[in-house]
Image 1 (cartoon, rainbow, N blue to C red):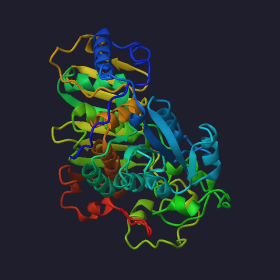
Image 2 (cartoon, rainbow, N blue to C red):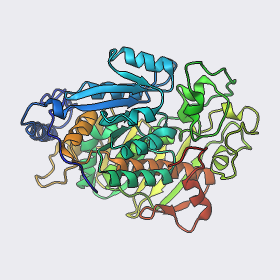
Image 3 (cartoon, rainbow, N blue to C red):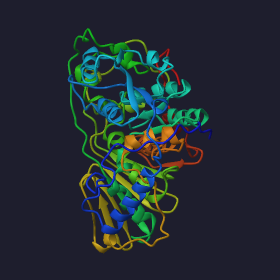
Amino acid sequence: MQRKQARGFSRRDFLATSMVGLGLAGLPDWFVKEAMADENETASKATRKIGPNDTIQFAGIGLGGSRGGFCQGLNDTHAAANHPGTKLMALCDLCGLHLDEAAAGFGPDVAKYKDFRDVLARKDIDAVVIGTPDHWHVLVATAALKAGKDVYCEKPLTLTIDEGKKLVKVWKESGRTFQVGSQQRSDPRFRLACELVRNGRLGKISTVEAHLPTGPTGGPYNAEPVPSDFDFEMWLGPRPQVDYNQVRCFGNFRQYMDYSGGMMTDWGAHHNDIAQWGLGYDRSGPVEIEGTATKLPFDDYDPYRKAWQDTRIYGKKESLPADHNNWFDNYPEFRVVYTYDNGVQLITSNVGDNGVLFTGEAGWIFVSRSEIKASDQKLLDEPLPPDHIKLYVSNDHMGNFLDCIRTGEDTICDAEIGHRSATVCHLGNISMVLQRKLHWDPKKEHFVNDGEANHYLRRPMRKPWTI
C-alpha cells in the first residue's frame, strides 16, 4: 500500500507518564512498567516542537446534539481539537440546530456546512472526523479518501460487507491514514487481555463470548413534520424514502435496519473486534456462522429480506404493512455462534455481563471497559516472558490517528480491521435472517456455494448515490 511522506512527529496530549493518565491503575505491575516504557519510547520520538507546517487542519462531519442521541461525532471532534498541532476548520451536519450548537463550542472562526461535499472540496482541510449515521459512513469516507483527506470514522464502519470491501480497496490505493473509532483497542485492559491470550496464557482457547446489551424495542411512532432546519431527504440518502419521525433520525437510528444492524453492529463492532484481536483473526474471519433471534413485533413480515431485494422501489413511499416504517426492526435478543478454522468458537449474544470472556484450558479472562479479571489472579499477575508477542500499543485513540498522520504509519484500527470487525456483525445478522447455518470464505469474502446468502452481501442504493 502506498504511504504518504511523513510530516514530522507529535507528542500526545494526555498525561503521558502517569499511571492514571494511561488508564493503568489496578493493572499488574509488570504490565504497567511495560506500558510506561512503551509510552516513553513513543514520546521520545517528539524531537522537536510542532511547527505551523505540521498543524493538521480538520473538519467534523456528523455531530449530533440536543434533539437526541449520543453525540459521538461531536465528542470525536472535540478530542481531535484538544490535541496540540490541530486546527478545526469546519463543521458539517444536516441539522441546523446541531450545527449551531456545535459551532457555539468552537468559536466564530469555524465554518459551517450542511453538505459534506462542500467540506471535502476545501484544499486547506487535511483530515475529517466522521460521526454520521452508519448508512453514510462508507459514502463519506470513500469520498474523503478520494479527495486526499485522512479519515477518522466511527464504528460500525459499514452497512454491508460489499461496501466495506470497496472502501478497503479505495483506502489502500489512496495511501491515506485511516482510523476506525473502535477505541477499546486503545484501552490497556483490552490490550492486556488480548496479549495474554495471544501468548498462550490460557492454553488452547475453546470459546470466546462477546456479551452485548439487549436491544430496545419501540413503536409504532407516528409520522411527524420534518423540522425546518433539517434536510431529511439528504439524511435518507441512499436508503428508501419513508415518513419522518424524530426517533428514527435522532437517537435510535441504529434500531432501524435501513440504517444499521442494531446491537449486533453497535456493541458487536466493539466486542467482536476485541475477540478477533485476541484470536489473531482481525484481518480474517470465521468459516461458519449460525444465529438465532427473537421474533420481531410484526411476525409475518421480514424487513431484512425486503431490504436486500433488488426489486425494492426507491424514491416512493412504499406499500408496507401498517406502521412498519415506525417500528424498530433490528433483533433485540440474539445468539450467534461463529466457528473459526482453528476450531475456536465466538459466541455473541445479549446474555451476560457486558464485555468479552476468553476461555481456555488453563481458565478464563474477562475484560470490559471497567475491569479485567481471571479465574485465577496469577493468570494476570505473572509476567509474560521478555520475548512475548506484543500487540500494537495505543493509549489514546484519537492521538494515535493524529500521530500516524504525521509519521505515515498505520493506525491501531485501520480500514481493513474495521471492515473485518463489521463483517462479523453482518454475518451474524444475515444468519439470523436466513435462520440456518452459513459457510463463509474469509479470503474471498463470500458465502460458499450459497447464492441466496451471497445476495445479502449488498443492498440496492437509491439514486443518485453509489459507491
